[in-house]
Amino acid sequence: MTKFFVTGDIGYQSETVLFESDSDKEAVRFAEKYIRWGDFGGYQFLSVGDYGPDGEYFEIWAMDAPEEEEEEEEEED
Image 1 (spheres, rainbow, N blue to C red):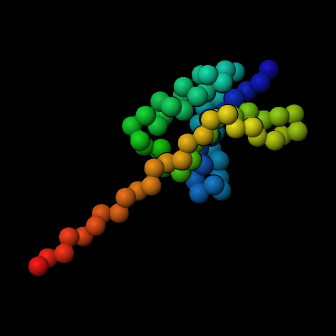
Image 2: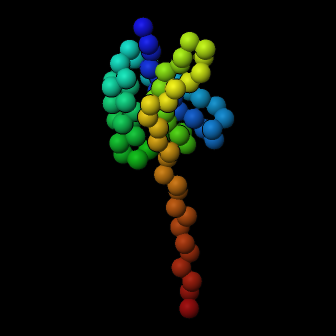
């Protein structure tokens, strides 16, 4: 049976499994709810996928965290 994983990634260097399911739809639903308020929980990237027999990761859904906007300082006259 195929397992689908929702993973969070920090700087595309370290993955953390946030959720595991037998259903791809359930895994995607979890990921979409996880980020629904625009908060990625500190992760820069979330993905949903499964691992093939050779260990290769097959991504079926992915989302980058929004860029943080820098506040511009107003110049005083």
